[in-house]
Length: 118
Image: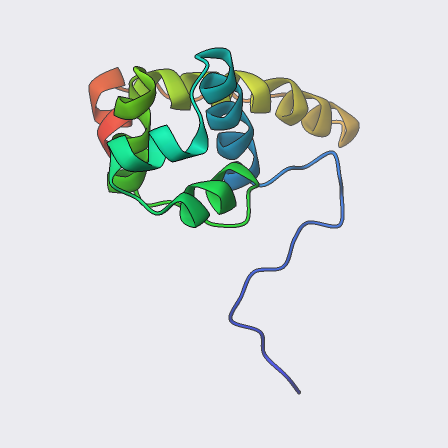
C-alpha cells in the first residue's frame, strides 16, 4: 500500500482549493493594478517563479509571503481573505444544499485575528 503525503487535487472542479482561489485573486489584483510579475516579485522580495506558481495555484504561500505580495499590490491580507471567502461562500452553500443539509452560521470572529491567521 502506498501512502501519499501530498494532498491530491480535488476531482470535483466545483470545489477549488484555497490556494487556487488566492492565486486567482492575486493575479487579478496584479493585472488590474497594471503590475508585472517582475515588479511584484522585486517589491515583495520573492522570486518571480514562486509568485507565478502561487498565482497559478500550484504553491501554498505562507502568511509572510502573502503579506509581502499583498503589500506590493497595495492591498491587505484581510481584503485578500475576504474576497476569497466571498468566492468560496456560494460554492459552499451550493454543496451543503445538494447534501440536503441546512447551512450553519459560522461563529463571529475578530477580523483582525482572522487577518493574522491568514
